[in-house]
Length: 94
Picture (cartoon, one colour):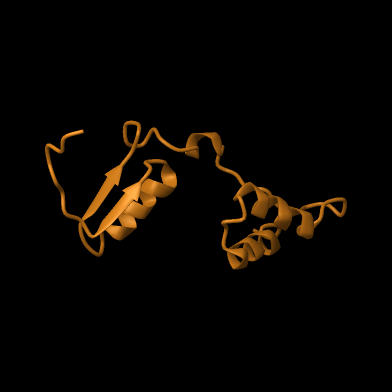
């Protein structure tokens, strides 16, 4: 594969879903950013499948511990445990 163009940037963001685009916007405050995607920007990722919601424990039959484990498992255990704890504990009230 030949390179037709070289671009210098402070940050390279891979993925044009909601998180990638948001990361690129935030990073652009600090220097040059390149956003790459396998699709047309704004049509990537799973953002459109998220349906704008999140889970929360709202009934006694549910469990914060189970919600925490499900969230960690869904993130392939790559999630930040402190952020997962904040999510599962604060979600019911929010």
